[in-house]
Amino acid sequence: MKSKISLLTLGTEDIKRAAVFYKALGFVVHGEEDEDHVMFKAEGTWLALYSKDLYEKEMGIAPTGEFSGVVMAHNVGSKEGVDEVMEEARAAGGKIVKEAYETYWGGYAGYFQDPDGHVWSAAWNPFTDLT
Image (cartoon, rainbow, N blue to C red):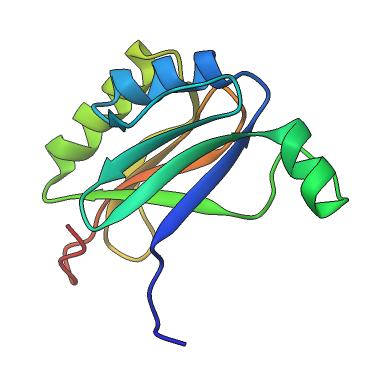
């Protein structure tokens, strides 16, 4: 297997609400939107929104808990960039989990949740360019 993540799919209770949130963050829809899924082409990968109900039917397990242990990151080139992403998330209706702060490892990061509770990190890493 190649060490590559080609698609990240987020289960959602409300496809339309989630799509509005991600469009407000600058994601562009690829193809047709419907009540069960939406696809976005991102730089170097894909993001999909998929009905939690359909996932449960397909896999036989239901998503549970407030935090799944998974955090997606949007890395930027500066502290100011982190602040901008956090404001975009807030304006789009995201819930700020933790305002941007100086991290213990020397970076700068903040955390927000999308309307379905998926956690995102907006981060600047002064040691490794992850942008």
